[in-house]
Amino acid sequence: MKTEMLPCDERGISAAAGLLKKGEVVAIPTETVYGLAADATNEDAVAKIFIAKGRPQDNPLIVHISEVEDMEKYARDIPDVAYRLAEKFWPGPLTMVLPKKDTIPMATSGGLDTVGIRLPSDMTARRIIKSAGVALAAPSANLSGSPSPTSAQHVFDDMNGRIPLIVDEGCCTVGVESTVISFDGEGVRILRPGYVTFEDLLTVTENVVIDKGVTAELDAGAVVASPGMKYKHYSPKADIVLVEGDLADFTEYVGKNYGDGVYAMIFNSDAKGFPYRYVMYGDNDKENAAEVFDRLREVDEIGAKKVYVRCPSKNGVGLAVYNRLLRAAGFEVVTL
Ligand code: AMP
Ligand code: MG
Image (cartoon, rainbow, N blue to C red; front, side):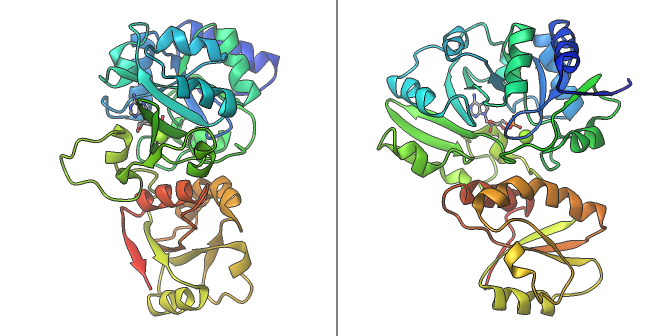
C-alpha cells in the first residue's frame, strides 16, 4: 500500500475523513503524539489498527471525541467528578476510563467492559473527528513497542506501506501520551501519568491516587489496571539505562562505563563542558516531555548501543517523562 502524506489543510482533513468513513486507518496529529485512527464503533476498522501497529489485542484503544456530550454516547454510569474534570481539562490530554456502552465493540476496549475516552485539544484532530462523524479509536501511531511518534516523519518511518494516509501537522506540542485515569466512586486513580498532572487533578478532587504500576515493575501475571503497562514500551534498539544522581556523579559514572557506542542523554544545561558523546532533551519537565520520544528515536539513528539517561524530576509532568523512560529502560535504574 502506498502511504500518502498530506498537510492538515482542507484537502488533508477531507481525505482523512473520507477514508475513516470507509473503515480505513489514518494517522492524525493530536497535541500529545500522532494517533493511528479508525472508526471506534467499527470492529473491522479497529482490527486494522491492531494489524498496522502489531499491537496485542488485549491492549485497549482510547476513543477520541469532538464534543463533551459525546461521552454519553459511548460511556455509562459517569460519576459527577468526571463531568467536573471534563469541564476543567477538556479539550486536552486527559483520558477517562468509564463503563462502556454497547456502541463500543470489545475489539476497541481490548475485551474490557470499560472504555477510555478523551477530547483532544488539537484542532486538526477535532476537525477530522467531526468530519468523519464518528468517534475515533486512536492509539499512538508507532509500531507496538517502539517510541511514540511526535512528528509525521516518525509515523512515516514506522507506518510506510501499512496505512493509506498520514495527516502532517508538524511536531506535537505535548510530546507524551495523555494522562489516563479511572474512577472509584468520586475518587480518581492515575493509571498512566501525562501532561495533566497529579497536582492538576487535585484542584478538582482531593481524592487522587497514583497506581503503583506507574513507577514500579509489575510482577509477571499480576492483574493490571491499565493493560498497556505490562508491555515493554517506548524502546529504541539501544540499551537505555536511567541514572539518578547529580551532574558530577553522573559524569563520573558515564566516564567509568564509556566505550564504543556509549552515549549520554542529558539536560540542555548539562551540555557545557560535558566530556562524552551526548544527546540533549530539555531543561524542564515540559521541554523534556516534548523532546523525550524524538531523542529515543535519535539514539538509534546515530547508532548508539547504550545510553545513560539523566533521570528527570518525578513531579508534575516530570512523572510522565520518568514513567516513559523507565519503560524504555526496561526498569533498569542506577542510583548514584
Ligand atoms: P496508547 O493508545 O498507545 O496511548 O495506549 C492507550 C493506553 O491507555 C492503553 O495501553 C491502556 O494502558 C490505557 N487504557 C485505554 N483504555 C483503557 C481501559 N478501558 N482501561 C484501562 N486502561 C486503558
Ligand atoms: Mg502507545
